[in-house]
Length: 300
Ligand code: SF4
Ligand code: SF4
Image (tube, rainbow, N blue to C red; front, side):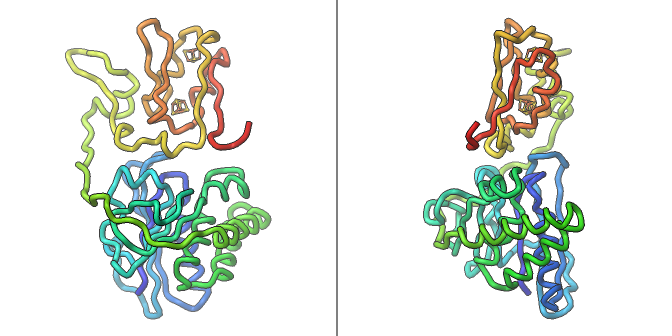
């Protein structure tokens, strides 16, 4: 049995990637299963998905703890979770990164395929949804399914949802990523230690975050999970704030889902881009156009 574990962030399409690789295997007459694991659901939060492929009927229903293939759809997850934990020594890792495998430290010295799937996705789909590109790199890592089958599964699955043309463009993204993938061995210096589980108090839930860091009814109210998730390393856009246009209405500060807009003493705003996921909600609510959103890595 071949087992795959996907690590991504909400919105990157990890679940669709798992389902599509399973469908590709089924197209080749194999048995397959795919299923997700979500924590608190929101765009940008770490998510996992799993796939199993075998010639025989698959009866096991657990999560994949010791994968043959590890798929990391967002490189910044390496700093947040021990994503490579459990990967078999003879297994391989597929990672969305601009770096060559030898420059990546996954915490295990294993065969590694890296590909800049974000650039492929932006180029082909005009959006950082990297799942179809990463599928191409997976086939490069291991030909347990053929590229043609993966492309057909993409056309079936994405075509059904988004139309035939979108299905074909996504299939082309897989082929481009397959061609651009780099193969090597990654480094194993990073400790694979599970960080403490975040068990939020009510002060750390989003409404608490929106209240800021002030002392309220004798309690400190402060940021919650975003301080661990560093969504700013994942976002593809950043807000640009023009304080000369700002009328200090505080709407952006209240609406920001990551609590990364800080209200200063003079009621002007400060943006902590480490936690900004580029959702653009602050831009929408600003009545004076004092915030614009800029794409990272794309020429304006
Ligand atoms: S784009 Fe604006 S609202 Fe969205 S996370 Fe960044 S600062 Fe907050
Ligand atoms: S919503 Fe616009 S005007 Fe209001 S505080 Fe934010 S930046 Fe300033």
